[in-house]
Image (cartoon, rainbow, N blue to C red; front, side, top):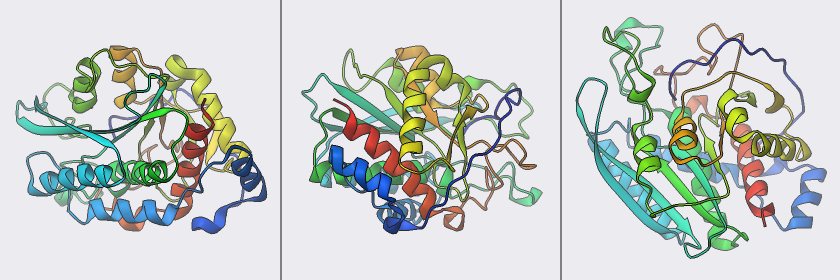
Amino acid sequence: MTSAVMSLLLFSCGSSNRKSGNQSTTESEQEMMKAIDVPSFDADSAFQYTKDQCDFGPRVPNSQAHKACAKFLANKLRSFGAQVTEQAVDLIAYDDKMLHCVNIIGSYKPESKKRIALFSHWDSRPFADHDSDVKNRHTPIDGANDGASGVGVLLELARQIQKKSPEMGVDIVFFDAEDYGAPEYYKGEKKDEYWCLGSQYWARQPHVSDYMARYGILLDMVGGKDASFYYEYYSMQYASKLTKKIWSVAKELGYGRYFISEDGGGVTDDHVFVNQLMHLPTTDIIPYQANNKHSSFGSTWHTLNDNMSAISVETLKAVGQTITTVVYREQ
C-alpha cells in the first residue's frame, strides 16, 4: 500500500459479531445468497492463496520470487477458466531503477460489454521502512496483508466464477509495482507518481483497446485482524454511489463491524490513477485506523510483521463474501 492517509477526516467504529471461516454465514446472509444464488465465499481457500504467494518470499520486481509468483498467478487464473493476459512492461522507479514488471489480467466472458473490473496489487514492498527496528528498514517484506490478501480474495472469487458464472463479464487485474514508492528515509523528492506504476501503465494502455467497464473495485490490505474499512476519500469523490452500495451490502450480510459507513481518509492508491487516467469509477476497500500510533493502515504496515500471522480468516470472509455478493447481484 502506498503513501499515508489524509488525517482531516474523523470517524467512529461500528460493531457486529462474526465467527471464523465458512461457519461465519449468518441467517440473513444465507437468505440473501439463496435469493440471488450467490456462492458462499471460502475464506480458508483465500487464506491458502494468500499463503501461497508469501511462500515465494517478497515479490519485489526483478527478484526470482517475483518472477516465480507471476507464473503462479497467471497459471492459477488459467486453471480457473480465465482468459489470461500478461502485460509485461519495464517501468522506471523513483530512483531511476528499471523494474521488469507484469500486470496479470484474468478475463471472464471477454466478449461481453457488460463488465466489472476487480483490482489488487500483487507485488510487495522492497523495504520495511516503517519497521520499529532501524536495522530492518532496508529489508523486503512478505506483504501478506499489503498485496497478497487482496490477490488471495480475488483468486478465490475466480475459482467461484469458474464453477458458476455471474451475469456480468469480470476482469480480475493484478497490478505490479504498486509498492515501489520512495521509502521514508529517501532524501530526494517524494511524489505520488512514484507509487502505483503498474496501474498507471494499465490505465493508459489497458489490455483491451478502448476498455470499458461499469465500475472497478480495488482490494488493498483486506486480510488484517480486526480491520475496519471506512469510506475512502477519493472513492467517494469518484465513485460514491458504488462505495455506498458495497458498504450497504456488507451491512446486510452482517459485516457492519468491518465496513463502517462513515468517512475515513484519502489514500494515493491504484484506484486514484484508474479514476483519473481512465475515468473508470473505482472504489478502494482499504483499512483505516485513525488512532493507531504506527499507521492508520495498521501496526504491520511496511514492517517485517506483515506476514501470515497478521492475516485473519474472518476479515477475508467479510470482504470476500461482500464482493462476491456485489458481483453476482449485478445485472
